[in-house]
Length: 228
Image (tube, rainbow, N blue to C red; front, top):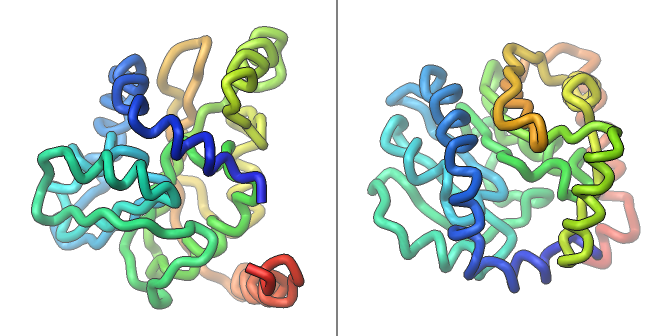
């Protein structure tokens, strides 16, 4: 499956240096999320990269499980000095090994738009979240402008692929359709690279439960999934 994995494996050694250019934005994300994090929370992070959110935020909670599908990204993340509450591991966001309702919060930072099938990760996040649990999904939202298309074209030259180009409204609608209740959605970053710091909750109802069950059954019945 073309999922950017080879790109991230190659790029991982330079990722921390690259992400420093966006340090101000990540500081904004941390500031926005911190009031929602409590000492008794168990948090799961998907697509953690080299730990730009997990390292500064993990001291705020009881435990923080930071995962990424790139083994090299996790190797680089483990080099950082971090809290004893933080644990890094290699995991597939679409096939998590954790039991149902295991976490108080799930973090998916700047990753939904680079996943070929973000609905699978969102369904897994829903499964492992406790009722009322939080989903923090800060995501770049370039929109459909000419400058956005040009920026994405240049990024594509490096091998980096963006599968979904959402506006903030489209991103919120995408999560709402999958049962998440939007609580806050401040826009952070710059006008060239705006980021929707989306915060939502798992508020189960009968329709949402039926939708999630149907989706997971469809995943199981998909012949492509069975081959994996």
